Length: 244
Ligand SMILES: [Zn+2]
Image (tube, protein in one colour):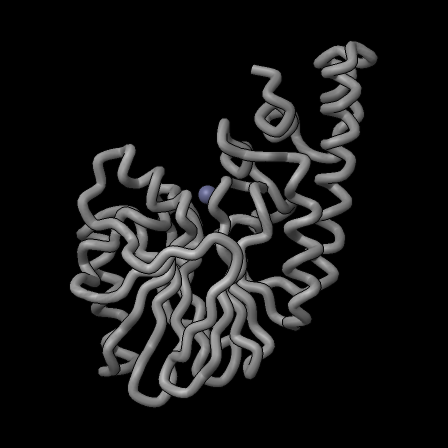
């Protein structure tokens, strides 16, 4: 896989990496740009910063889609600059001793102006993590969804999609929130851009996992039966339902 910028709409780019199949974003306005996620460490962040400079010389602002290291630990390569994130992202990164912390925090919504382009940052409640932020570029009909959306062929989830900080029950509603933004192109946190139908299908998978989870918690299903009835692979089901 060649690492390159994919222009998904006018002045809006996605860049997909071999490492964790991570996908980062870039929005270029008139005299300013916005970098969405930073890769996993200072060295990888420096590579990304250099790649941004191949596209635009404009000063950048950074937004973090959530605190997970593969998205957030490359921040030092971009400083000094404004770094936007959810307030819980700041808490998590500070708890892990990170020195390069976001300094522009939101709880629900924020609106940025990136060189004349309006960009919305929205948190739809706890889902993949408790600090997922999506980045909506209305004039381009694009939304960067972070790990609320992952495209990992042939399925839409991996075991890594579900962590101890995941709120399974909140995830379908968060996807409804993303769909409600109305964007046609959805850039996931991992993998290639997807369309709205993909999110609808992903929501259905999550609903079925939530139903199985409830049945397991209620003692109506054992782990083996839940795995057999699951729409996703065993390792993914185990992670989502915390079956160990
Ligand atoms: Zn994540």
